[in-house]
Length: 184
Image 1 (spheres, rainbow, N blue to C red):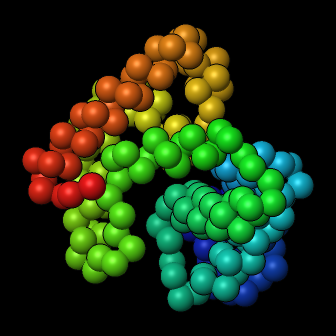
Image 2 (image 1 turned 90 degrees about the vertical axis):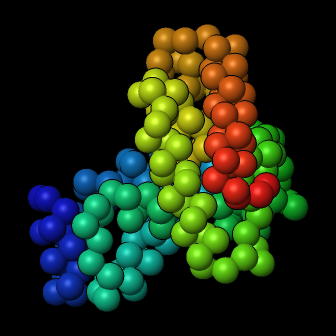
Image 3 (image 1 turned 30 degrees about the horizontal axis):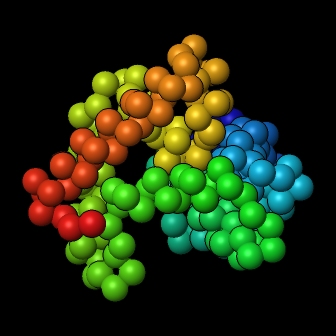
């Protein structure tokens, strides 16, 4: 079943929307949640929360890329769960990723929507300018929160090479943000 048909099921309020979503995107959502939460049980709960949130938000939303929409929901729910659980059970790999990201992503907690839109456009433009290999590694690390070890294994490169690639890309991104007059 294609995305438009699945979204139509949500609009019809058909319970099969969840079943079809799970068939097509269950493993994808679980992968995202698992990389953040490091627990299959917590990831499964997060995926169920994602389906609930999709049910609540479609309609009125009508996502054109259902995979991106579900990925964003899953990631947001998993990060919130991680922050909630953080005091009770530490997850060092995710802490490292957050620390790395703090080096190059501005804090917009007190910013307005135009600052967020400007940052989003800058990120999209920067990522689009990267070579395919660097882009995939960067997105795997900072969007999917994959470990350096997993990235290296999946792409047949050394962990050291991944770390260097990420460090250089973070530095390039910092410079790019300065040129765009976005302060960190």
